[in-house]
Image (cartoon, rainbow, N blue to C red; front, side):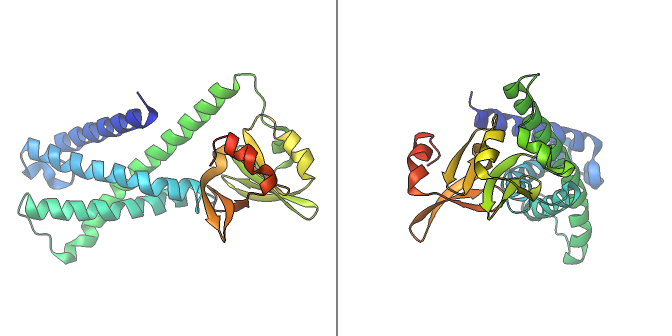
Length: 249
């Protein structure tokens, strides 16, 4: 079974389990509906939230907004997820149960949806952090030490995932999942201290970790690697062959 299949099965099981719990307790006055209708109602809305989260959460937690505090990322993601869930709720109420919610009641309904979304978003964020941490530990082994370069970073970045390193005059900019930091160092020395992280040099002034790669694109005819942080790493002709051989393109 592929990772995607396992992920879909987990999401389906999670939606059904929560649907059963919400239906059993008749959350948010849904007890006025028959049990099977409550189950379908809650399972459908929770499944919508999970599917929306699959789109929203990578953008918030790994791409443009990855540098923000966890609480703020959870709030932004939960709010974005709540919009399609709210729409599905209104559609189900109108066309399945023949219930019409007046627009003046929408803010209250959205507040209920947001509360549930906040709880689920936080839970999924914690689960994702746990899985990635566990995967890293399993891959590295119990006695593995973090790359030496992490000792040069401020404490707030030492447990973050390193996405790339770029040279700026005599300094290096370390791109991580929790933000960026400038350190005084040569790129060649930094690459030696990055031992243990799978990555490649893409340009005379750039090194990119495989984990930090989001997508590849062409800008004005030149190949560029887009990082999960939103930064763009150029690819020079010198290093293109090694990047192709690694399967990054």
